[in-house]
Length: 205
Length: 223
Image 1 (cartoon, rainbow over the protein chains, first blue to last red):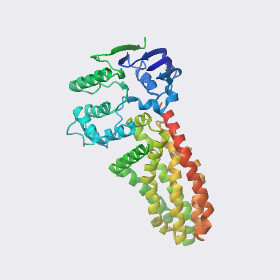
Image 2: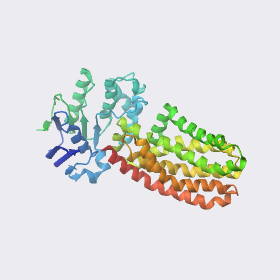
Image 3: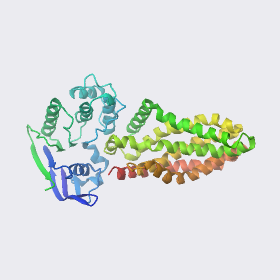
Image 4: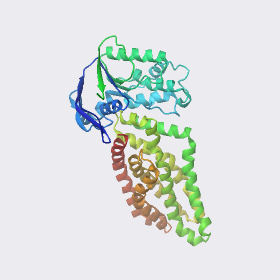
């Protein structure tokens, strides 16, 4: 499904990685590891198409993601370091906007259930600026419950989360993999899977 | 597709309504700049009538400039811009929605308040009408062209100054024909037609080209 061919990325003069190739089939989790500054986020952003690689190609269902454009974005859910939520809007408003723009049916009940599932019952209507870091992250992560994208790209999704939320997210990831989804993530934590396979990629060696 | 346009438009307007100061700053800036000139150059009727169109238009230019810096930068800082780039919707459409919200919040209030401000310059009825109409057609062009500059200078330190240097020269045609329409409008509205034809063509051109350019610029800036 997702093929990365001979990828090379630079930041300024520094080469982060080159000749990176792998492919990802359904039901696979790619766990990207490496020291700080080894290019994990850069790789994830390149796979998202937010960043143009210096060499090599990324293909989705056999076609270059550059050529696919918006059709590719429909299949991808990206959650980066920044939560990507508006602090003046409430959790439910943020989720509603994200769902509408993703083209998912913004069924109200589904959105409320997603926030409740993320442990935000009672906080749905508050502007997210009054929420804690962990709660903001939960609002951002609620998108995985609403989105129908087969490929999730998660950059350090476990930071700022408490133990319960970490468990919850691990379950959600495992479920997504079991449902023939694909996940690319960077984390320093282990993610146990119930089915499917884990592939590990170590950057910076 | 239009749902995403309405969604982004509604989002930006809701956000602005929860932070009204940013909208009001632009409006008050416009009112104050326009009001300073009669105080500075004296209250002689003929001088003011001559200065009026130019002053109002230059003030509108600067006011629209003032708010442009925030057009994309707030979204850039909290990561929502990345998410906009990652949606399955055509980016130029989303940019157009953001610009439309920007104009409704900063351009339209200027158009509405302009007749009041124009009183200070002893403008005749037809001049005031020409001024309102020229601002109505001209200020969207300012927002549209400005969005390209705002996208290009995104994330650049001291981007505000750079944005002015980049965009103000592009505003010149709008200024010339906008202020021209007001000046000619004193002799009756019929005289202003060529000016409005040109302003209208600027608007159409900007409407089509600037969302494409701003969208491309955003993709580069976010890298």
